[in-house]
Amino acid sequence: MFGLTALDLARIQFGFTISFHIVFPAITIGLAAYLAVLEGCWLRTQRPLYRDLYHFWSKIFAVNFGMGVVSGLVMAYQFGTNWSFFSEFAGSITGPLLTYEVLTAFFLEAGFLGVMLFGWNRVGPGLHFFSTVMVALGTLISATWILASNSWMQTPAGFEIIDGRVVPTNWFEVIFNPSFPYRLVHMSVAAFLATALFVGASAAWHLLRGRDNPAIRKMLSMAMWMLLIVAPIQAVIGDFHGLNTLKHQPAKIAALEGHWENKGNEALPLLLFGWPDMAREETRFAVEVPHLGSLILTHSWDGQIQGLKEFPPQDRPNATILFWSFRVMVGLGLLMILLGVWSLILRRRDRIYRVRPFLHMALWMGPSGVIAILAGWYTTEIGRQPWVVYGLQRTADAVSPHGVPELATTLAIFVVAYCFVFGVGIAYMMRLVRKGPLLEEPKPYGGPGREHTPARPLSAVDDDEVLAPTPTARTRS
Image 1: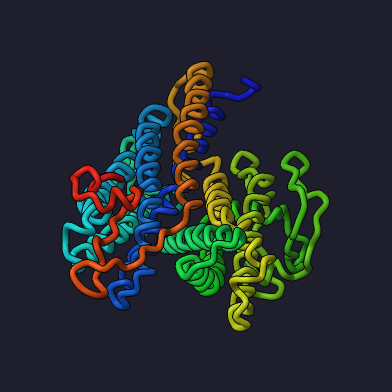
Image 2 (image 1 turned 90 degrees about the horizontal axis):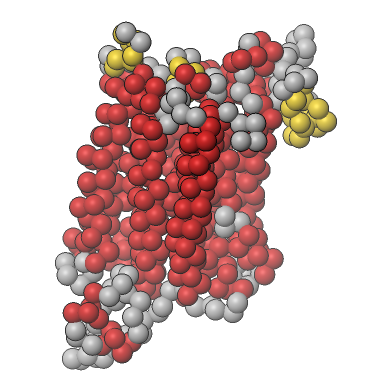
């Protein structure tokens, strides 16, 4: 099929499915934390604005959470179907780590998710807030186990190889392998940024269309504060992560920098743009900034790193893809910092909700967090090649012995099914975003200042249905 081998198709299939899947858990992590903050603010201030925002975003969270669960099920099956030799080789490490995720995070989320989504009128405010916090904690625990498994594949530690299989010898070293802390923090912060940009874009969309109310303004304000504070922190985290990668995976750094060889004792320039040519072993059309590469990569004015030519050709990752995926991630990160700084300037002038060019930028930056996550994930995973477990098992040795027709057929089925199922889910989620938060005015009942009925998560019914005391109206979602 188009000259692709079975290995190529297996990699494309896994890359396609994980590209869909990674988006939903990232937004789930950010939205769960956002909901916990909103409910905490409501409990502290009793301002209906926070309650209404909670109800609005809880609906979107529920749809996103469901799509994340569905897309995640496929990932687990692929380890046995398409990558059976990997499972045989490293299953004693990855299997327990994924099991721990189910036993801790998934059970925690499942236990409290129902209370969080449907218990607003059925449990006390303290218990409901506790449930929201537990769901948010569960999403972070889930990310911890998944990244522990993936990080071990990047920087394996705490094991022995016995009879051609990996055997864990120290679970602490397995979990807290050299790259795990950096990758966990980097990914978690990326999830918060992606969610903040999503929330900010939603608010900007409504403001640009003249829908200006306190809830919309609060959405934009909270999102921009998160962006202003966290985006620069993410840049610092990325620098530490890069230094760790340089230590343990120098070929990956050489590839994403388009660096082929050192020239005497010359300092490394930073290549802003160019086209790494794997066949010619050079980066063509390079636009360089002298010394900046040394300063960023080694924190010295004239430091050097290994060039790609120092690694055997069969051990080099694809520099052409890595060079540009990395720059997409970094470029979007710089735009996030710029948007956060712009929001601060406008906030100090009390114009943040009225300057249309700023609102347009906030709107168009909405998908940038997700795109940056995907670009960063491609950089990480493609940069590990040609290894599936770095330095231990090659990707070509991990794939199941399927033929091209079988893999091409299943890939086509995945593309059609995913585009339909998740296309419908995303369209519905965007429809909810376009509706915006519904502000509920206090209604007299039994005395001045008392509301007729509390708002409920996942309620999309009309006011007449809200007033009806039937079980159907009380539980419709």
